[in-house]
Length: 517
Image (tube, rainbow, N blue to C red; front, side, top):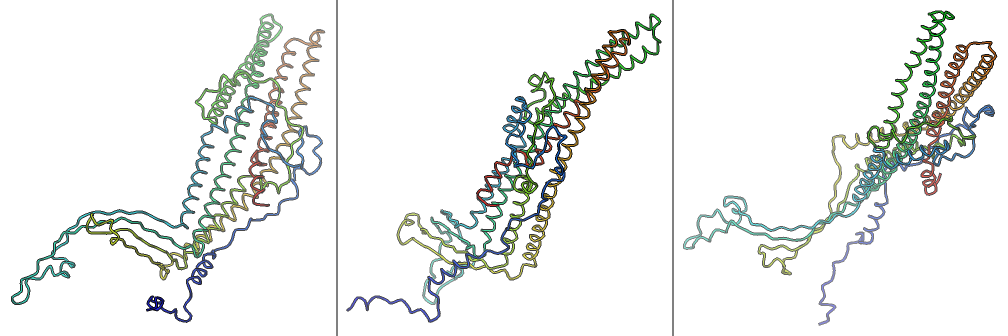
């Protein structure tokens, strides 16, 4: 007999039944569907330039210029190696920055978990045990366990044993097809979460470097102020001694000595608050560097005698550059991206889901025959789940995600506006404080000229030493005011660099190179 005729033939497929290839193509087509809106980078129209740069700032010693911004290691403009070392240590040791780095790792782990949602899941299993069934149970009744006797002349069959064994090894596998993009939207949201965490670390880094620089400048200013006050206290004591001597000899009234004593007490009263400011600034820097209190006392002991030198020019770029440089703006954009993807996730819940599953292995009631070929088993199939009635839960989740998306869009707009205002206000403050510091420096120069003239007249016998010391006191007061103006201008420059995005620009530029404008 012909072997081809003996081979069983596959049943003919009814007309109109799709082939396996067609089914796979259909599944692939459905797998390309992604629910929800696709994220598009938001756009905002920036001001053409900063209002504070209107007109040439010719009267400023440190001029903000609308040239390309370069914030790489911006604190080095102060040319202070001690400050450079403090910032570098803070960037390595600060606890808040380390916590921000851990949050990035957490977000990356969540991304891995989200990516696993769209992949098959396989688990091994093993089972071995013994059980006892109830003689009065349902299965025993089906097996004749409850039968009391047989027919006429026939002995009753023995009751089955209630004990049984089962041994099984194998695997389970499931795979939910991502027909509507639920898993892909989850991965998209998780990637945006990683970006958000990275930008949050950027904001923390900018805040840290700015806080270190600001605290350091205030510390140096307080130390220099203490030296000025100490000189003023010494002059006040000298004036008091001279006044008391003149009072004893009848050349001055006793009230003059009392007045000089009051001035001395007033000068001495300035020292404790300054000492407190110095101690708090040192401890503040130690905290930023994750060091115990007092750890920097020896390192930050002597204060420099010169004023803080400001750079002759500060390139600030254009307002539109902030959108791609400031990490808080980029974080708000990443949060908006994540909210957009989560809306797609919520919408995908409305549609049917198909889960492929299978199991296979070896199963036997005897351990000795578990590895026999006859002990093999397998099962495979697909499960379709269709949401029919959820009590409005799924639609409520979609509404929630939609509202959260709108909130994220408003938060992005608010962050952009705040960035524009922060930069413009910082520019205005820096320019005004420079003018203020210049006026105080001029007042100090005038006070010193007056002191020099007074000393010259005292040598010629026209004025007394008391009047010379009074002129010196006015010089000390002018020195304190000029010092405070210089420190304020320097800290305003720190605030300006912070508002412009600090030194986070390198990471933003690298990201732009791969994602486009």
